[in-house]
Length: 348
Image 1 (cartoon, one colour):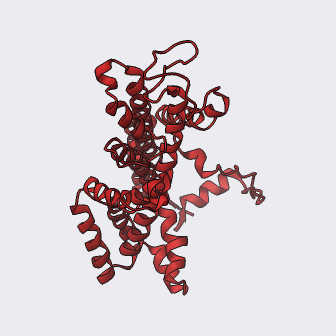
Image 2 (cartoon, helix red, strand yellow):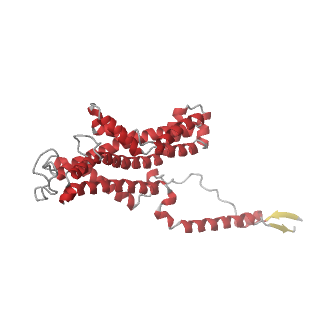
Image 3 (cartoon, helix red, strand yellow):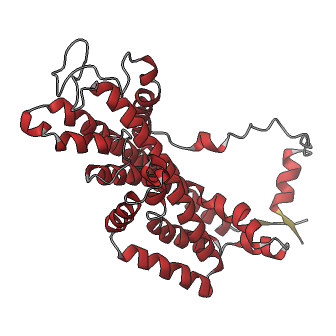
């Protein structure tokens, strides 16, 4: 009596095995990483708003027949065919002033927002990665700055700089510097938490064992994992900087002799545009400022959906079906693993 495996019997019945072709077939070309992102309609709407405003601010003055410093009428002339939004308190064309103000406010936001992001990300990454006493020191300074309302700090610094005779601090760049060095704390706290989480991953340990130095690890191994978060923080800093400039300018602490959305509102209020019914003096800058803020905040929200798969609206509908498919595949695999290999007894 001999025990013969059923697999061998089956192999004889089916005939000799034909060797497969070892040559691999053509591999599918890998898609770039950005093509896997979900660019939804919210992203395109927010980008459209920002692009249109940027074109009006930077390209519009080149095509518009009047300049922001060209006197074309008297105090609060009503809108007409020649001047679409009338004139403001100094007799300048409102559209020309509005485009110049929007340009300067965007430049201020870019400078201040970028500076605040760089400072916040630098402090947060160093504190989160190194830890220890350095983290306690940096976060202690951050908490102290956060404890003081930022608008109070901005007002005090702006008042001090306005009283000096240094022209730099009275311009749009000087104001952006003030806003940038006072707006970084919340970014530093948020990035510190993310960097602390990344520093515990295996690729960081591998980099340390390979002899890489701390600056190289921070640049090559930590910051790339925080890129999406840094971009979203930068967008929020842009919106915050533009609103901060408008607030200071409305209080009379903005860049003197420079057009901005906040200064335009300041002069409109100072010359009683609301009381006199000159809506074209205060309503256009208010609308533009609202659109800029809405576009940037909407962009940040849409970027969160792009970078975070859990928030992608297009994927939510398929989550239940995908979970069901995974459960079915796991059940079939479990059944196959439990099935014993049959042994057939053949009597010779």
